[in-house]
Figure: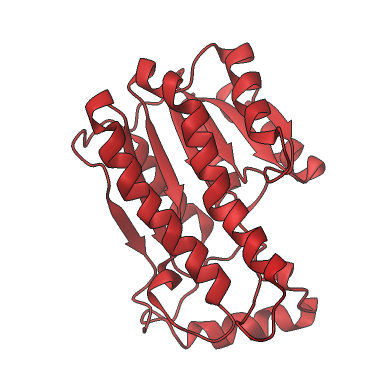
Length: 254
């Protein structure tokens, strides 16, 4: 399957690592013009350099914490200043924090709702006029864990469920404008999310081994596999696919 993203302007949040980074590199193979958004400067620059080597196009790198005031506006403004248009928005920025109703501070809930819902909502709102002009599309990154009920995942799952509902409603609002909105729900993927739980390096593989037991295929997803599905959702091959939730998780045992 050959995609055509040549000269398409694509914003990827969470572009410095994991699924976002692999998605950026894959878009670069098809000559896309990239705006990469992340919080880690060295990783963001490494991804940008890799993309430039692949495509010859120099990505725009925006180093921001998206939940901070003014950050979403900066992403859209800087992208338009450099590229004059926006064709695709990939809301990939995310965070995993464990929390329960009785043991967690409300700040955990607020933080996850901010990064998983408020940021995609606001970026979509800000990017909409430009996406309407380009007849572009939006791909949100959710989680197949939103269908599961496990202790410790309450605020994470609530925020990802909210993102899926937002995707479906946004798709309905934008369908008459020619803008598609879809969501990809990956299962456990080999990214930095587990490291963000402050697990010792030596325990990371142990954590993955335990997670594999819950997967029908007994394999952790690799970011490249999820990136391929993101490109499929973002391409123009299926113009009637909007408001869709696409799951890739190796048959998670609910």
